[in-house]
Length: 254
Image (cartoon, rainbow, N blue to C red):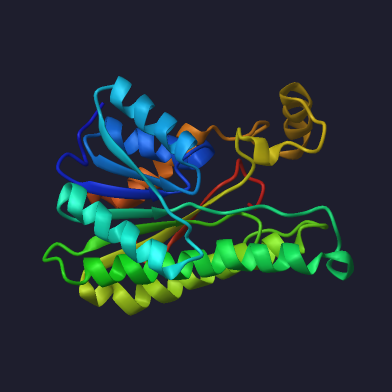
């Protein structure tokens, strides 16, 4: 155990489950004060309780990243709680799939755009607005996907398009704001040990067998492994990384 983030204030969106929860727990374990954000209060409270059980510091704040006023208020409340916004992890996202482009429901397309792209843009805008006024700047890590800029598969074109946009937006924002002392990078996970990587009706054992054949690594990544990549990018060890997109997918896109 290290204390790389002692005294730092960290905001994590989509922190009620999966990768977001693992990221929040990992930052708290390394000394950060964490704001766990998302749309569902009950799941956020569970994340905060898990952090508190391990002696960490965290608060839950409900917010919808598709609403600019929610995101601005989220940043404001983060600063009210902990005095600054040192690190932000834009993890909130949704998955819709199972249909080719010609049959992609318009509602699914709009939901993917609203959450995965507009939600990241609005979060970046609110976070940068705070960080550019801090003497120490800040660090932002966006959660993209290996599906998008790195890899394509049939049947998930909407998700792929939005995650490719996140990867591109990350690089563009990184160039725009590094001069203000704000480092922006992305992590692009492949299949991870969450419900999102399960096919309809598939069990964990079924998925394990499928991934053993499908991935060079032979297994899905754990949420802790993805969190470790996020913490690396947020740490001083990654001080020279600007606009990078770290793929954590067991070799699927290699």
